[in-house]
Length: 489
Ligand SMILES: C[S@@+](CC[C@H](N)C(=O)[O-])C[C@H]1O[C@@H](n2cnc3c(N)ncnc32)[C@H](O)[C@@H]1O
Image (cartoon, rainbow, N blue to C red; front, side, top):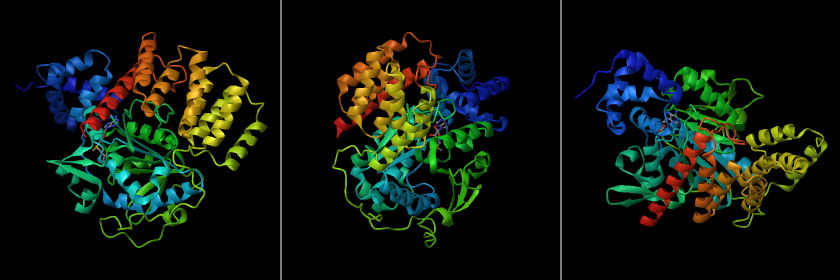
């Protein structure tokens, strides 16, 4: 039986959703809200929509409740190679220019699909990277994909898709990058392993952050997400994206979402096929694409599709190449210059050194970040937080063994240092050491018992005890899903 939800309840639920998820339900969308509540009622053990609304309003929402309600109220509509005009700009200009630039320094790219739904967008980027980078194995690719909808994320981790996800995809791409199994298609394992899926609530979670690896992004795609947000929440998200991008980094929104961007301080770059955004502190708000993209001007891409290109269009790298598996250390002159610069400022107080280390890390200048951090460690050896920060920077440089050493020092100095145990768990997981990972994550959960859920943790960049608990649980669930999936192959 359908329960009518009184307007005052709907108004309160709309307010709650706005603050907790950023999603906007003005009165004209209350029928959608009531339908979503009715659909979620069963999951909450309620008899109908009104009872469900009352239950949600009774106490602060938990992450699980947010996940459930989000899965009924968000629009998860997505498909492979959606919105081809902006993908054409990405494939023909932004990615080739980024790749060319990074070849000269570190072979490192950091990309974030924010609001990834069931993963089609993130895998589309993975396919583009595979097409564009011949020596992909020699690159450090951090391709992060996040969403608030845990059901969608589970599907994304599996990487199984039905025909509808390929509604606008040429068959040759389907054949090349997917395996057909009965009635569904599976993304190639190599592409699946390129993407890291995580739960992240754009309206509530802190970012940029070294902890969630949402810092120093070269490219953020947040398409068809902010159109469901209130203008105020969208502005906050855009401000955070601005801080999460490195100088010269790019933001791509949905083709119909440009009006939200009037709030942003990012420069607007008009390509013939689509408008995108770039962090360019020195420029005016409107930038001519030709002025910043060596790849322009090409001919306009064929209407509505990505320009066909040979399998690997970017020239192969020049020697010397790092040996496979060798951590690509920062280029010596850069590291030396960074260290020299930091040396000059050795008299700076430790908190200032740490601030500089963080801001360099946020901008992707890892050599300088490490040099600052080394200074801080030298000046104040017994503070576990500096060793932890050092480990986070080293991890981004793929210097895993050294990062592990710094983390061990951090937890030796303070056995109750939650973030140290958490980082050790993540590293162990990355190295495939399941037992060690489980042990560290259990340590984290045990230590978190001593904290009230709303308390921010030391050295956690605003992450609270309650949130870390959720992150650990979802990390363990995602890992199990990935393993189960790999075993089923
Ligand atoms: C229409 S889908 C967009 C998928 C993909 N970006 C695309 O363009 O095809 C919108 C996604 O935004 C997610 N979303 C909504 N609110 C969010 C929030 N507060 N934090 C993170 N993701 C959110 C939804 O769960 C949904 O998966």
